[in-house]
Length: 96
Image 1 (tube, rainbow, N blue to C red):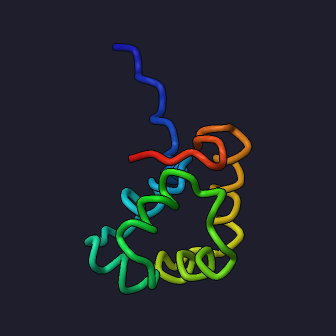
Image 2: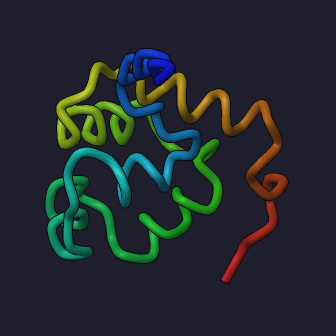
């Protein structure tokens, strides 16, 4: 009986590609209220930042990194990649 190939090594979970994935589908899960309290943002502001992360301030990025217990460079890298990929709507447009 032929032997099967060895199993592939388990990779660490691929980092989320979008800012909203960091908040919603990362290591931790938070309620809307918890996000609002920890990030010191209104519900509407959180939704706006998820829709267009290019509008995040440095202070907001620092709070997100602290909340997620992630290096701020990693959070910035996700946001930068998303903005450069053009995933977000152009500045000045809003999404409902």
